Length: 413
Image (cartoon, rainbow, N blue to C red; front, side):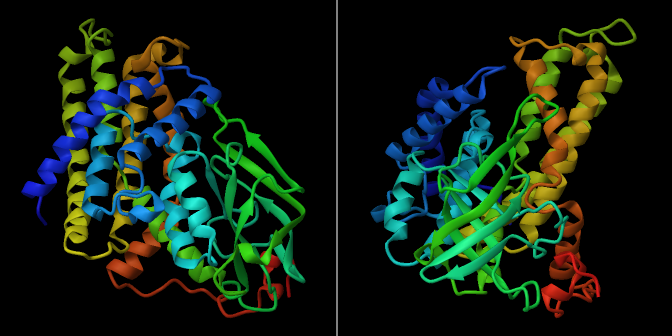
């Protein structure tokens, strides 16, 4: 792998860094910002990036993109995270851009890309991913939400859960069961769904952090035109693979997230006294922990470097992105837990104006979600074992059984 920028990449990085330094501060929210404030600033941030050609860097200019390279896109995301703006899109649902647009381009019927992509880049259309269901667990294909054909429409009934950003979303990516008589991976159909359609109810799920980023979504006789179908009838799993591949790249563990938490911990350590009476930053045990975490984060940087090298050679990264996502999410949780332990009872305080404390508290509450989002760790381990290490697949006795005869359908035979 190559850890250094080419001359062209270095020039692009300098351009991005200068633009971020000039523009990012106006869109950065402070600790305790309300959901409405995050949404307003987040949409505005997407619009600003779109005007400058930094949203959809790899997209053709006809769709509002830059016509750039995957490496340029990765460079921008690295610099955006360094400028402490990397979580802005994800915090209100804008992070789905990287999953929705490739799926639309690859599978949507004529006219939809022209209609949806440019407004999406400008933050005028936000997306949610309607995959997970209450009875599905980590089995992505165990969908029970039904889509029944009725002329030129489909009638959808069912429930989704843990849907990030659904309360803000204008459109959704929906996978539903269209033929229960087929095996579970074969009887699915994929749709674009207008989230303002009659029959859709969104219920936010209150988190322990006080935020409500996830939602339950209920469908009651929701009518979706067949023109909004992506891919073939009962061919939705193949479409979903496009979405999931891009999701893993989007969720690839960003080392700057951990570095951000560490930076705030060091600042807190400079004004917090430990059990010895000295400031935390002067205690050897504290300094050793900080050093070990920096080493771990450096390891995830090398994973990103491998992926970046592949992109620079025109190779689409495969399952190795799962390694980065799993590794960084686990380290982020360990860093957050140690941070809360290190600062002691101060971690229990609610200080709206203390950015250092707020960042650590949010990381503590949200870190476990990173280990589940985009596929549980158990699924990630299977991907690594089977697709990277070449180990035998897990036994999947229900893979070829009609879904209507499986326990996931609710009928045990």
